[in-house]
Structures are given as C-alpha cells and as structure tokens.
Image 1 (tube, rainbow, N blue to C red):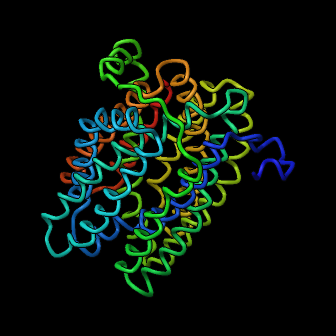
Image 2 (tube, one colour):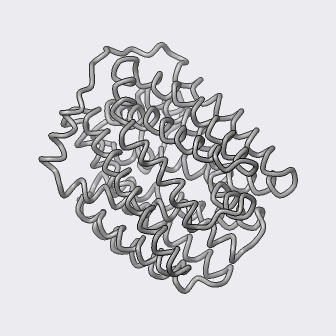
Length: 383
C-alpha cells in the first residue's frame, strides 16, 4: 500500500483503509474517462447538434427529474447488493448515455433517451459512492481523505480536458467518446480486487423523509448545488464562444484546474482543524462574488482568471461541505443521509435548469445566468 511505503506530509491522509484506497483508484479511472468529454458535452450539443442554451439546460433538467425519483431505488440496490456492486451496475448506463448523446446529432429523440439513462446512472452510482466514503473514511482525517480524493478528481480533470481537446480536435468527437467509454468500463476493477464484505440492509425512504422534516435548512443549502447545473452546462458554452477551439479550451481548463488542485490539499488540512461551517460560509461568499465577476470575462485572459479563482473558491466550499456531510451521514443512517444529500442537490439543479432556460430564452444573456448561479451559491451558507 502506498501509505505503508512513503512518509507523506500532513497535508495528505495516511493509513488509509483498503476500501478508500480502492475507491481512489476507481475514481481516478472513471473521472479521467469523464474528464475527456465532460466539458465538451455541452459544446458538442451547442456547436454540432445546434441546440440552444435553453434546450441544453432543459435536457440536463430531464436527467435530474429522473434522478429525483430514481435515487431511492438506486439506494436500495446498493443497500441490498453492496456499494461496489451499485457502482458496477451504473457503468453500462453511463456508456449508453454517451452512445445516445453522440447519436443524437442524427435523431434528437435519442437525446431524450440518453439523458433519461444518465439519470438512472446517477441513481445507482452516487448513493453507493457517498455511502462508501462515509462508512470507511476515518474521523480524525476525514477532511484530508476527502481532499486527497478531490485532488485525484482534479488531477485527472487536469489531464482529461487536455487530452480530450487534442483527441476531439485531431480525430473527432466520436473517437473521444469511444476511448472514454472503454476507460470508464474498466473503473470497476479496483473495487473488486478484494471481495466486498457487505451485510445487506433494506433501505426505507421514510428514513430520508425524516431528514427533510428535521433539517429543512440543510435541504436548502444542498439545493445550492443548482449553480453546478449552470457551471457544467452553460459556462463551457460561454468559454467556447470566447476562446474557440477544443485544444485551447482544454488547455485553459487544464491550467485553471491545476491551480485549484494544489490549493485543495491545503484546504483539506485546515478543514480538519478549523470550523467547517465557517469555512463553508467564507467560501460560499467568495464563490458567489466570483460568479458575479464572470460578467466581466470577455477575453481569453479574463475567462482564465475567472475560471481559476472560481475553482479555488469552490474548493473552499466543497471540501468542508463534503466532509461535514459525510460526518453527518456517519452519525445518522448512512444511506438515508446520502439520498437526502443527493436528492436535495438534484431538486436544486432541476429548479436551476428550468429557471435558467426560461431566463435565457427571454434575455439571451449569459450575464443573467451568472447572477442566478451566484445567488444559488449563497445557499451553501445554510449547510
């Protein structure tokens, strides 16, 4: 094991449990595959399929509409068959999503099927992922363990857009989707290096409903993730309009993510020391302000700085937010809280998709969407 061979500085988690190490490896493969195409998916829909920003937002809203209703069933699958199996069952739906996404340029009806399948994929993957991290992370270094996981996600997010941009520019988007699918199909392997030891336990949605009644402010706080609906689907299109070219976009996002990754490890360290709620509030305020700053981002340089500072301030929110979420899940019933978190998030994203689509339809202004995302970001302060 890595942590038995190296003396790592205190910014890194040490003596990791096997399940967490296996999750790190799985996430590295899966997220690299997704990073090859993720930022280019809305650009593909915008520039190749010729959908409007409003149509892109509504399609993604369909995913979260499905997700809201499907996630209790996904949680039940993981509770009965194991967390690793829940992730395994999600993989075909992710690959089919990419197949239907690419095929949608010929038949737009296939896009609807693809985004429904994407909602099913999420309902199987995320309850299993969150429950696994909440169960096996160690309390005294939970922040550092998550920051390392987040850093791994960011590292592959550094490499992914660069290679995805090169592949798409030189060989076409189709080849990029094929390579991403092949890599993603391998992401389950680390989870089954050792046999999963799991005691089946039936999940009941009423346990999650009790959390809605007991923590209404937390529901609103998690709904703040609605800003990600605009970040992941509108911001790439905006970058495309300013920067132009897959390779240039990939390079810009690569450098911006590198900066955020270095800072993420430091944030994980201070998360284990200082008040997580205070860090979340400070981060939410800064992140909201940087959303408003994007209004002035009209050149390649200003887009780069806006993306870099926004990623860094998002880390200041996301790492302590995720840490405190896993702590609460571990203190309560793990799977009900994982569903509460993801379902609240999905409701926020669905609302953001509908609101953003309506506002852009009537105004045609990206600046309006920046303001909406900034206001959604302030909700994080309620967590």
